[in-house]
Length: 294
Image 1 (cartoon, one colour):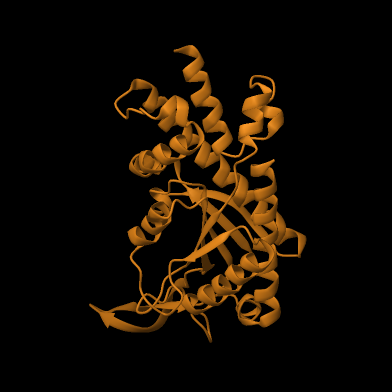
Image 2 (cartoon, helix red, strand yellow):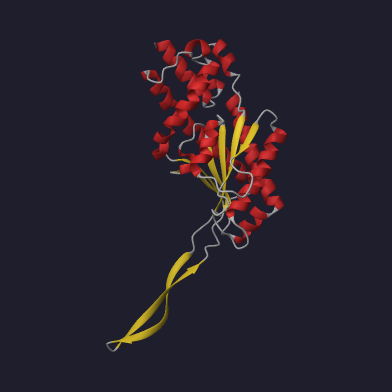
């Protein structure tokens, strides 16, 4: 029982992309050899919004269009430079895809990574101003009007992972993916894998935490690449996002800039800006892939 449980734990850490140094002290050479076979084979790219769901609005553009342009360019770059990786898009045209279908596709295709691309925006600043006066019972009463002023100064990138409050929603997806992973890598030991076995709950719990940890790792790599090219980073954050909640793999949502900021909007729409963002994302994926596979 102990040896079987230890194998489950080691396998889970491996699936999460643990480094050889983390496992080498407790795993034998034969297991290390088997672990080296892990590869990131499928990445799902999700351009946010679409069709009537335009997302954030800038002065001259809308989020759904920028997200799609960057997503398609990123996919082409991945296919060009990472020949062993298959790219799947949640949309390739201006259509609306419900959130649950986006992550559902990633789960169905047994994706190894899920990356959702968005543009950020700040709400307008609302301020009450006096527009005039009227008299009531001999008193001078001010007349107020709420005026909205665009918030155009906020800038920078930020990348989100699913908040811890959403962890319970991953159970079904992890169960679906875990059985396949176990069968492919440990056929001899786990052909009779029983989801009612108490040990299964241990692996599901470990995998949930592993996916969260690896999502944070990928998000940190993405933000680090943005910073290298002079972008201001607002950091990695956890948020209760429906599109990431049921992910049975490491998953992030990256805000590539503020469309509400005129300077950043121009950058997000420019060929140079989009090329640089794609380069940032591709370099982060390459770094993550190297760490996960070695």
